[in-house]
Image (cartoon, rainbow, N blue to C red):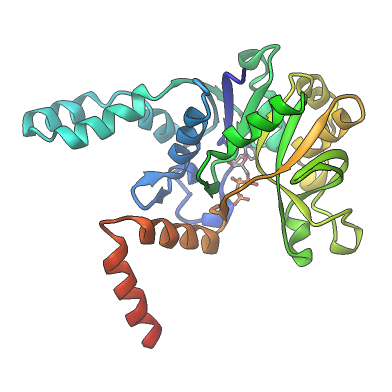
Length: 288
Ligand code: UTP
């Protein structure tokens, strides 16, 4: 049903400067894989085949990463390193990749609007790869299940956040219709804690109806002077069935330095090769 996933990756990543001056934030490694690869793998595991990546200046490394690396493959073949060769090839074979440029990062909504012709008239997923989610069932799969079970037009991933953090997120006002499932009545982008309609924050996974595109065309710049995806979804909520779903899984906000470090430590601790030594190291550091 959901065949296409959009990966907005054209932002400047200013919270990671100077690391992101000439390299894309989406290519920062989480242990040994770039952030965006986790998102693509999640979409693939949810049954999505076509990955549409919104890029911009300085983002060529993303295209190179998902393309064939002929010289590298040749070298690994000559060395007889079958395991690494398979790892490298799997990245390219995983899916079909399509690219569109956002000439200026005018906001997440604007980035999604750039994919209008590539997506066409069908529902699609949006994945923000700096929200890394560790879950048994891929979050996008969980959301597609909700989309189908409740005949939704759009589904937003949500998570409860501490009240003092609501101003970092889009916050929904919802009516609970089942365990962890809400009908979205309204939503606000980055509200002050006192004005937030709930503590249910939108996280970087969406299933959207194609009606989002005409809504985005009409959306004027909102919070931070950017064209906000939240504002366009809000305009759909009265007309279509927009649901929000509290997914199962642990989410790391790898879009800021602390969250990125936490994700790296958590993933490395789970790695059978790195975990045991890292644990010893962390215990030693704690005593210092
Ligand atoms: P962020 O809000 O994290 O912005 O965007 P950013 O530019 O990446 O990072 P900071 O805030 O300056 O540190 C969330 C996602 O949306 C994409 C980003 O690339 C990121 O994956 N995005 C954002 C776009 O593609 N275009 C935009 O105009 C804005």
